[in-house]
Length: 215
Image (cartoon, rainbow, N blue to C red; front, side, top):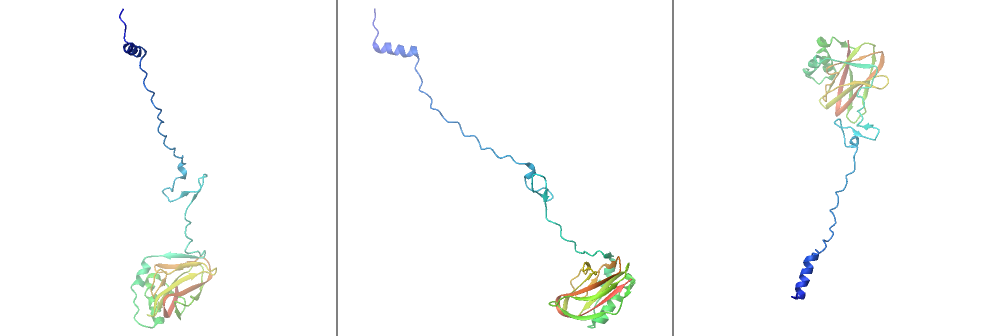
């Protein structure tokens, strides 16, 4: 009988049993991405109108509208672009504000069909002085137009009308020394009222004249 060597017998034993592979080290799995918080579509930003959601109830907030410019319930405005032409072409030719303000009104009579309510009022005022007032005893259903002329020392003269409740019904729309209230029309009264024409100087100091006309 042939004897096997010890080394050969060991090799055959390893082949028969199968060599065991070294264990694979445990590798931790990659971390999961963080979950994003869920958002309510109604709470994301502003809509096309600039309104932003205020709460879950759907209420919205927005910039409040500006207060109305004219608050009088007794005065309305009658506007006609043709009325602006007669005043825009008027030119002051003398330093006599009383004479010039009457010429200003007469130059528009063919267009407005109005006549003066009374003689013009003359006064002196500066931009640092409080506004001055001219009384107007308005009749129901009547429309009025106010002409004003200031001397060269006043760069901006301003006019507006207030009713007896102190509410503004109209104001002139130009920054010059010869305003008209209204530049392109007139203001009218729904009822008889003790109104006032408020005259203020925006820039300068000097003398002015004001005359009220009516239909």
